[in-house]
Length: 292
Image (tube, rainbow, N blue to C red):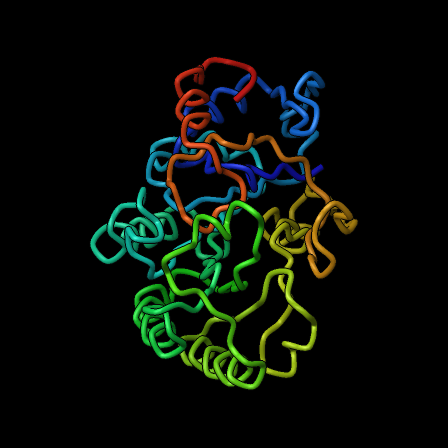
């Protein structure tokens, strides 16, 4: 199986010590988010895990603990956007801090293990198509050579995200303007040697030079593990995850995170919507515990 750590929260940013302990212990307990009384024990023994995908906006707390990941094939989905504290209030400054963190992580684990996520993209009073193109060029110029791939997606509206995004002047682009924007973005990525892919977007984007992303990517995990060249390596199951959105290309995985546990406070977030609950969950967190 593949471990997703995690679509529900930022484990590297807030719970890296806990994850390191769970990897050393060889198992983790996970509550069913729809039925918290249902708890599942997940083996984290290297012989049972085909790979680990770590989702994060700030892996800096995990940098001293990368050795815990060495028995596994793994890679990071690293979200790095140009949004400021009006959109992502809990993150350090991108220009002076987070770009350097991205570069350091890549230097330590290899660029094939760090996928850059420029998502979600939304258009607002400040965040015009031209603003995005200029910011994308600035980021890509500094990340080129530290990653192979950039994944984009557009903001999906859930009940809580629509409420949280009020005041930013969010609007939809007409289809022809959106297509023109994406063509320019694809050309920009190519100019920096980056493969541009889209997460859970319509396959028609292929005509604009944008491939379909598999964020939980069995082929990438196989490549990282050395299969089939390395003795003892094995193929990674590539069964589509039917629990995700219709255009999602992810392989099936087991998520070990929990909702309402991330303190970044991003206004577009679908996984965290109750600040009091987030604070309470963080207060209850035990790095030595079996449950997050």
